Image (cartoon, helix red, strand yellow):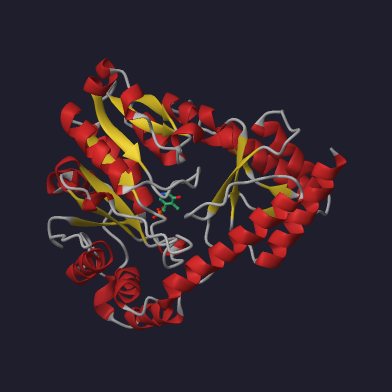
Length: 389
Ligand SMILES: *Cc1c(COP(=O)(O)O)cnc(C)c1O
């Protein structure tokens, strides 16, 4: 039996290589400090888990959930109002997803025909690429470069490409580059999208993991944004609910209805028990969100200061759960070689930037997903490697 050719395009050689080496290193008895996958390591707040317990006892919660409880969509609309000052109609402008990944993966099927051009940040979160490949669209990478503060240079996109482009992905606070965007940048995106009739999909997974008083904005705060696009909002990072698989798409009603049309052929909605936990998260006390951000800030500081002492200067991000680290001075090798060497010799797993696109060369992504003590140990281990040359 032969697998479909689209599967070949999906496999990521670098992620596979890191996984295999991790197993080999563990078999040698080394305990690997895994700063690879951006999966939150903390549990949700107790009131969220309690709501889930209560929901388990309601017999009504075991039917096919379909489009999502109206109470949950209202809760999200209220949250957007409180947090961003953005009004959403809970019926037409809020779609419940099985984690935002669900929507990120399926939106291209609703809008991209084979051969259509899609503008994708490079480096970028892997599902943006995968969704286009599954829909048989064409990828046009928008480089995210340090000299442009890791924002795509819209002026640099050739006009014929812009005219043919169907969809554009953006994501701030960004994974993997840990950069943030201003309202001003979003205004330029809206203008560009209107000029060239492009659907904008903004992924806002990290809007609550921001530090030092900084408050990320929603794309939908931008005048005109709702005419051109939608935003994906996830509970995974904000409330440590990654395993619950609950997220939302919000914004343009026509776009959401097309996405829902694809989804209604594929799934029957999110388990009602999880939806009730989502209501508790969005409507309950928000102290846990502040604490969560504070945890990541402290971890960021431990790593940034620790690495700086080793002579490895890494920019301190204003938001997200990652460091986007240029390779240490003296390491002119590829990001892949550096990351493989670090894992092999120190047992510290970070992801080479090239796993996220060509422009990731020269960087590694370090996820802040372990306690401060473990991060200190990671710094020590890295010190032995860098010190040894
Ligand atoms: C973690 C993450 C998500 C969240 O995905 P869910 O499916 O909602 O868990 C979305 N986008 C980016 C860029 C992420 O890093």
